[in-house]
Length: 252
Image 1 (cartoon, rainbow, N blue to C red):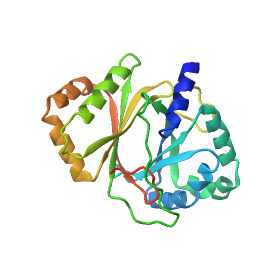
Image 2: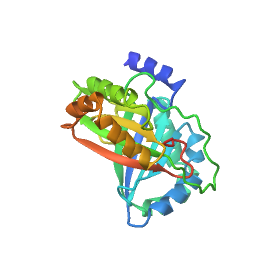
Image 3: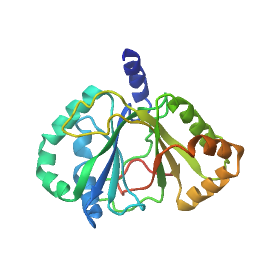
Image 4: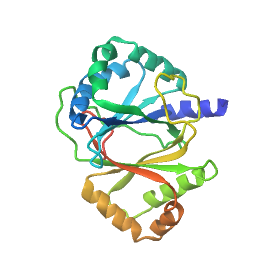
């Protein structure tokens, strides 16, 4: 455990974050834009002042009633303290009824760590200010592979090789690769999906056309064939993510 904690500290100096929550909310029909407007206005800075990093928040064209977002923490102790202070604090108490009214389910949560040193999110862009309405063009594709512990490291290497060494003109970039964080949930008021081993890969594209070109280009390479052999039988979830106006993580 001590070795894990040292690695996480090194990781936090260059990337966000050593501990990441991937949160998927199922919403009542037609409520997504209402929640996003509330979230972008009230729930970004109010969390970040307490030690949380709001990495990105997204619509997905694959499900109009789903809201997906990512938040990170430098370590588990900060996670527990930041979540308690936020959910017991004035901003959440003031807006929780409006937020919860949009949701059918908010318990679909994976707690993750970078799969290896340097594979977390590098956030170089500035977050647009409160009130921003322009939706960025970028597209992020999040793929959740359900693995067992014995093949997670090998499949992570295959994934990174396939995408990093694939055709250079198809517009894809690896944004982050994460594995399951196995530390106990130290804020049990918010459930997480436990007892699962996952590899979660985030790739960024300028737009949908770049995503389509990448898939076609990768499929035509030897690396694409190797990738298919390794991953075609692995259970997965794939989500196309479109950043909200204030998401700091963007596809391009």
